[in-house]
Amino acid sequence: MLDVYKQSTIGQYEASLRTLGRCIDDCPDGSWDAPVCNNPFCQSVFHTLFFADLYLGESPEDQRAQAFHTERPGFFRDYEELVDKKPGNLYAKADINEYLQFCVQKARDVVNASTEEWLAGETGIPWQTFSRAEMHVYNIRHIHHHVAQLSLRLRIDHGIDIRWVKSGW
Figure 1: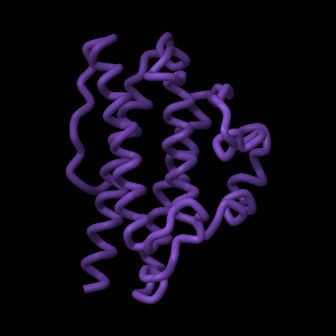
Figure 2 (figure 1 turned 60 degrees about the vertical axis):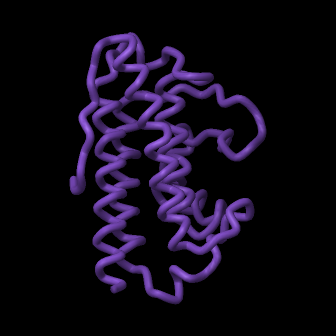
């Protein structure tokens, strides 16, 4: 059963992140920094990836210690996503696409390495008090929540339809 869980979870991570990738790729340059709800499009994408990355890890400290983060201090700057303030940083599309690829690979690696004991354990995220298995479901739901906002903005402003991705990359 663990193998079925892993395969299904990886498939859904890849599908949700691929759909986010379509939003990134299809966003016209003139709308990249334009508002989506309360934040610029690029900030909404970054937020989605930042928390996907965080929720795939062991803790906020673990996230900061990753080579992907330590090698890009200008990209992650002050970790404003982890403090109670309105985010203000903007992000280049090329950097966001690189982060997307990192998150896809991290999802594959983390889920593939999972054991039943690890999945039954707590998340390590202080404000998320459920199992790591449920964290994966929560994380995928969070990605979809923001993909819905981004794709709706693209549809309303530009008539761009972001197709649903079933599974896989």
